[in-house]
Every structure is written in C-alpha cells, then in structure tokens.
Length: 316
Image (cartoon, rainbow, N blue to C red; front, side, top):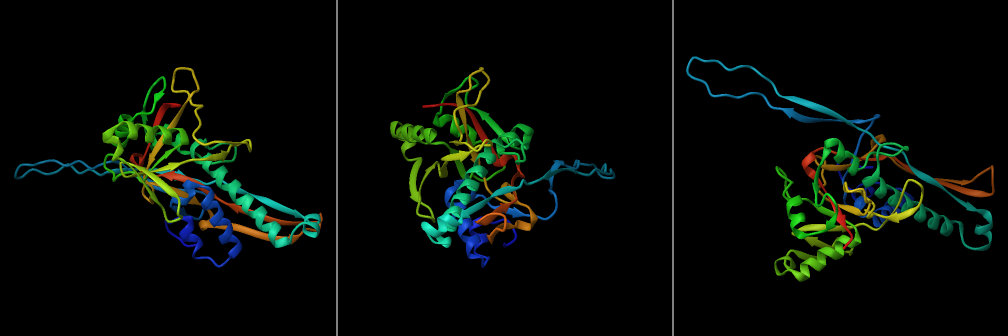
C-alpha cells in the first residue's frame, strides 16, 4: 500500500492484488466515512504526535535592555489502532450444487467487506477505546481533542442558526470538509431551506466521483450515514436519537462538522498500512474453503479545531 496521508481508494491503485482491490472498493462503497477520510500508515505500537502547548515570551525593550530568555513547549499524544477483520468459509456442498467456488467466495468477501465498513463506521462515532476497539470522535471530543456546540441542554429540533454557530467554531481553520448527519437531520435541513428564502441558496446538490448525489449546506458536503454494526453485532442506525443531553431523557442525536487531513482528522493504519486479504483454499479440518480479512484501523484528531460536535438534536 502507498504511504502518506491518502484515501483508501488512492492507496488501492498502488497494489496488484485483485482480490484485495475488490474488497477495498466494496468497503469504500459501503462507508461514506471511509470513502472520504485520509489514512496515515505507521509502524510500531502507536503514533506519536506533538501539539503546540505554550509559546515563548516576547516583549518590547528599551535601548540597552536585554530580553528574558524563554522557550515554547509541546504536548505529546499517542494514537493507537485496533484489529478489525473476520473469516469467510465456503462449504464444499455449496460449491458442488449451487455455484462455482469463485462466485461463492466473491459473495462472501463482499459481505465481509460490507460488515467491516459498517463496524468501522460505528466505532468512528461510538468507540470508547475498550472492548478491543479504538476511541471514536465522541470520546475524543469529551477528552478535549475537539469542540462541542450544545444545540440544547434539554433537546431541541435542529436549526440553521445552530449550524451557523457550530460552523464558526472552526477558528484558525479553513472551512470544514463535511457535515456528518443522519437521515432525519438531512430532512430537517432541506425542510428549513425550503421554508427560508435565505436558506434555499445555501443548500445545493451535485454528484461526486462515484456518481452519488451529494447535498451541501453553505458549501459543506452533507454526509448522510446509513446503518452500522454495533459492538454486539447488531445492525443499528448511525447517529441514533439515543443520547442524553443532560435532562435524563435519551432522545437526542449529534451531528459533526469535520475537516479531513493529515494535520486535522485522519484515519490511522497500523503495520505500515497493511490491509491483509488472504485466500487459504480448502482446510484440512473441514470440507470448507477459508479466507481471512484483517486490517488495523484507528482515528486521530491532530487539531482540536478540526471537528465540532453539535449535540442535543431532537428528532424533527
């Protein structure tokens, strides 16, 4: 795999393994986050990143005076990854009576790729660094690696004014690259745009490089999340209305402004970016053909001003 911060789609172009390319392309198609986020490969147990902490002292002086020497300081953070993957098995019975081995394996690898994409998307938001996974953006923001705009402390329907205020938290930053939302929030934004003359011109529609229709608000692409697979293996909706804004009721969700980049929000790939897709053939232990997919993903937020969580959103 190629090195440097780049998307999985670009990285896949540098390989010659057709099976691996097919798996990666399926993962990209199934995950709107993996499709967009750049990836930073590294070797070792963790990636060290230094963040500017304090600046040296400066001052005006009179003739003959001297300066007081000082130096700035940095704070080091360490970012890790988790192991994600699975195995596929194709029984000889299916090969003999239903389809070819190649066709059956292709279907199973596609299912495995889809499951990996959906599991990563869940961890991207909800991961807490336990249960073998990595820390997601919600936990990292709570730890001070991002910002939160509380739309309502008790829960309220999303408004364009709140999006504006959250957007303005990107100080010392360019504009965000994406607004990560669920389908309900997407409907609310389009409804507000139709009802507000000033909002109509702020919502546009276009098609991306994969031919998918993309909605944008104020020039920021709206990434609509679909279903994900949670830690129990259950398919659930992404960004669900199950958060507690502080009033004791778990009935709100969040939206996220994010800027992708090697100095902003990036994906991490351990083992130098290794993405392992192996086909072992028929096993000795059983009349089955075995394959395995494994990779080492994680995420890092190198700049706290590169992501803003908009919390306290009630269903429209």
